[in-house]
Length: 308
Length: 253
Image 1 (cartoon, chains in turn green, red):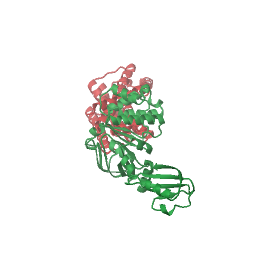
Image 2 (tube, chains in turn green, yellow; image 1 turned 135 degrees about the vertical axis):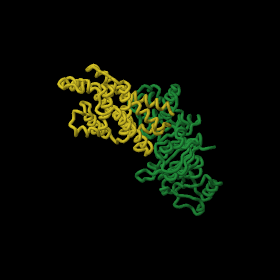
Image 3 (tube, chains in turn brown, orange; image 1 turned 90 degrees about the vertical axis):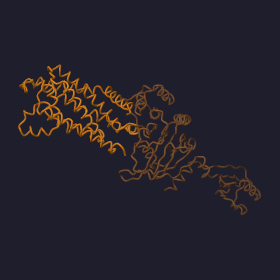
Image 4 (tube, each protein chain N blue to C red; image 1 turned 30 degrees about the vertical axis):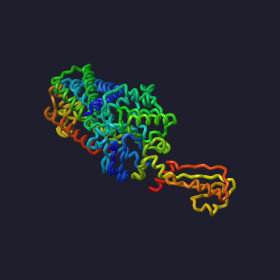
């Protein structure tokens, strides 16, 4: 299937000489939720801004649903909705007016039913006649999302949508994202909350220092990079690991009461059974055991550290 | 052609005028009325007729021009500067609108406001002095051309400006002096010959002269030159706007 967004050899050098993006190649699949992770200043917002037409690319090409974002900008931009990171709203407009304005700006004829639907979905309906400056920060964030959805985009960019947002709005937002995805909208989001990406995304891209370090299916990524650990809580403390267990990747806690075994979930045999038998044979008794899996956050931190 | 976008921006800008009715319409009308009281009635009664026209009536076209120029500039510059200032311009830049459409809608709205204002001031003037318009078509033509040209100029200032101070700078330091020295309140003939020649370098002289001609059939410079100069300013403004959008100057990073 043709990618809905295709970024080829994209570079961006700002007038200051700063290279914000270095030869980015990235395909976004139709209908997926793609999470773009990266530390502050890695180039996430620049990449989104370039695709949306706010930043001029220095080199490279971007196609949105097959339309070049420069030569055929009308077709490309009309299917994109953008929710920016900053809370940039008009102050004196009413919610209804500003959302209707966005729809017109993106070339769609007025459709009060659709605006009503969007406002209701975002719990903004009872605020529709309020001036935007009277709204709270969370409500302004909802207004920005409503503006982005006003013209029924097929691709939605959410640039850190949940930064500084309360629990309720976060939950609403993820519900909205799921329902949009079900209706076939492709969603690209950046976030600092890695647990969000872990929960929501189909694929994950990591950007660091203006370069795409990794793009992978989330499940695949977790599998590939995920290490699992089995911890045995010992009945009696050990001074050192018995020689009979030397063949395993074991670590004894400093107090000598926990034995941790690290293994690869990808491997054909995890070796757990054999380990437990050998532990038994060595006369070590344990009262409990538990396993832990490294989270996306651990993976992310490792990747970014390696990239620097 | 994204007609919906043009309509949306135009309506957005016109709604802004309604919200700021005091500042946009009433303030200029009051200040113009004050000019009439001071120059028309108080001082004007001691000034003999200028080229056969009472002084009060003589200054009407100049006063309309004065408001037209300053209001076109401030409307258009503020209209595009404010989204830059608040950051909402991201939406405009990411929308499927062409540069021509952006300019047409912003400048069109600013020019509309100026034209409406110009007509209101004209009507206000009618309360103070008897009005005579010999060439109504050309009067409207100069009104529209000047509003559009200076709205374009204001649009350029709005894009160029990095702060509210710069936004005020050009209107205050350049346009106001040029307008006052451009024959709003006098005929160029009243100046000593040297200053008459200097005045010919003032573009506003041509605008006011042409506009006054459409009222009373008298002019400092021939109406053809006035029209040509107005079109030249229009052309220059269009060229600068085209360059701004081609390069993304001060708009895109």
